[in-house]
Image (cartoon, rainbow, N blue to C red; front, side):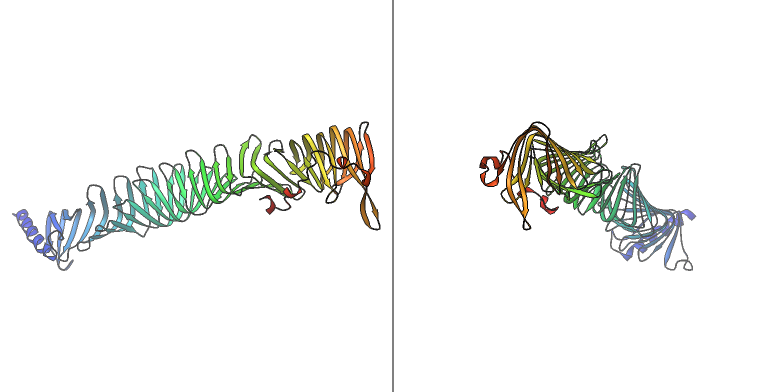
Length: 501
């Protein structure tokens, strides 16, 4: 008889409380083991106890006990659970549900769960009508699909699109990576994280800094739309926009690209760049420039395309097409240049030309050996030619098959020419404070040694029997004044860092 009266009371009061809204808006009581009124505890409310169940629109609520108010509010206690559709489940210790605007305030051990993630937080404001759940006291999300764990101080979950919006002390962790930032969006169905503020992505030896972009945690691909930096054990790649594929280890960058390698004392700049972390190689194009720190001086080099790769004992740099470089004591131009850190050699190919002080050196192939970051020795192979400007129309000239030179702290100081060596040397005298040309010395010899001072030939030593003649300038045959191949290329010489472009 008691059970019958209780059910009768519940049936009557359910209809009574449902009058507060239209059909479909009211909260429907499906079950309760016991119901009563107690105005001392909850005026105007029906008190329900034991296996309490409600239905409202597409949501089902369960709890141990509840107060059901005439204005379509439910105050639920103990093992509260709200299920919306077949996928979204929310549970808490207690909840206050408003049937008019379909919102719930959940408190105490709150857990929100769908098919691919689980959110835990102390409190949650859940808007069932608009598909929006908000926490402001810290939350922890576990992604079952991606094995990601994400924490933040504040967050919003958009249930329809399965998108989280996190802010303040955001941290996404995975066995292979960690992402920290200030503001992040995360779509649980796709595993894509979007960054809207300073963000750091860390994975083993690689660290990425970006203010805006996205990272696909499943495919491990990133796209950054504002200036970002990838650090990889002493090497960095940065650009105004970037793509990065973790699986292939490749990065692409556009706009003010900078590749820095502190282990090899070099920086490469350009408009576009590609980087492969597996081979530790990079390709830079568009206003490409290499900055190579050599002792106390720096070499600045430009080419249409710059390649950097790692060798066993250091970096290898290749520059192709319209190559020019500038250093205070040495400048050069060619079509292909290779620098190898392993053997400390600069190799120049395809119409190479080198300037040191007042001397211009050309040949089929030029090699510069470095020591302690400074030019030490020079090797010119085949068609070696040295030209020094005396005045606007006269040039000292030395040519031979090969040439070997020696540098010191002031530049090129001596060299040896071998194989069909020939010279044209203009003798000068100073009269009344003015230096003028008085004659021209024309000599042939198999080997010639030249010592320089202030960038000009100071002494010329013929090591084998020379065939030489000294002409007064006015009587020198024109064909003796300029040897074939004596092409003065001073217009190509970069006189500053800017000139390499």
